[in-house]
Length: 132
Image 1 (cartoon, one colour):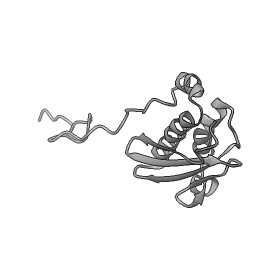
Image 2 (cartoon, helix red, strand yellow):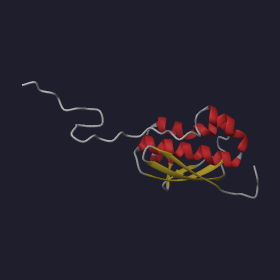
Image 3 (cartoon, rainbow, N blue to C red):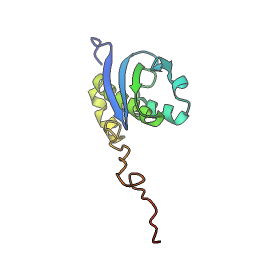
Image 4 (cartoon, rainbow, N blue to C red):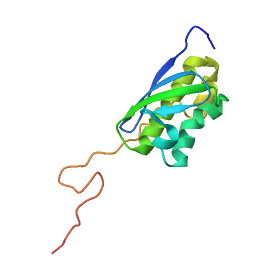
């Protein structure tokens, strides 16, 4: 870890969400859109998703995180934040790449909503066929 850089920045994406993540040495405080993480996300699963990169690299409570996230829903935003934190941790310590890669935290999840098809009810759903 170099003492010259005091902030680390990365962008994370998931579904339609984009998270801009700034990390600086601190005591583990996560602020999302000017709100504490506990206030922004109600579900414990989403908070666990965000903490995952820190647990994998063993850096729990070593960094304060400031996040600006927009687009998508709760789950997509949590995934985007996790992706951004993972990329920022790489900037801190390049040796953690193997651990993060093994857990699949550096890969951008490509799954997104499939578009609705014309003349049909949805992406895959069809209108009911009537013989008579």
